[in-house]
Image (cartoon, rainbow, N blue to C red; front, side, top):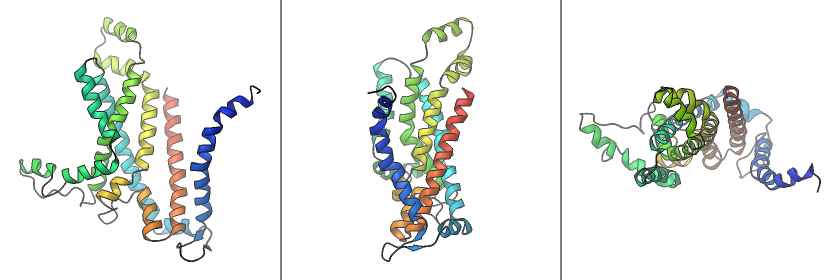
Length: 284
């Protein structure tokens, strides 16, 4: 085995996985996006009509705008809360270990269970949020029924679930920073904020890049909480990319439109992930 072929052999299983489960399905979706097909009659060639229809009706821009808003809120919330908790809980002791495990446990629970839990919490009549707000005189709060608040509310649920994941990644990053560097800064008179701004934050940039990229991908893939908590409502105000694809193909039987949305979804997510990665590398 030559030195040139050995890396490719080692990468072969991963490349095969990506080809079978990423690139091949996207290729099939790209092919099907040029047809009009309802799963019942033979496919009919329509060219780029599915794409032009999505643009002319405004469906693509509205779905993309809602998904970007949701993703921005999730990425910012997850990164900030994960980093804050990591800084707060990066200590030894059983109590801190218990708190870390408790926070991380939300991440391992299924999206379905989390969605059902938050449906109860946000219930406008008997939910925990409604009870707490009623104590200060605020009544009839329907966060999931208001088009203006439904996306931020769903983002809060997503942040609550995946913050534990971000916290663990940041904890791993913090533990790679030499304590001697922090001790030297402390002896030089640097306070906690100066140590964070000039030492911890710059050294955590690779970790932050990884957390923001993975959080962005998770946010764009949101489906379960939409399906269970809002079904895309009210008035399509929470219809994000993946749910729009599901609705187009399984509820409306428009395979061509769903395939076009899938291709656009893949391209947008790829561009955003690469742009985010390169932006963090440029700052490093």
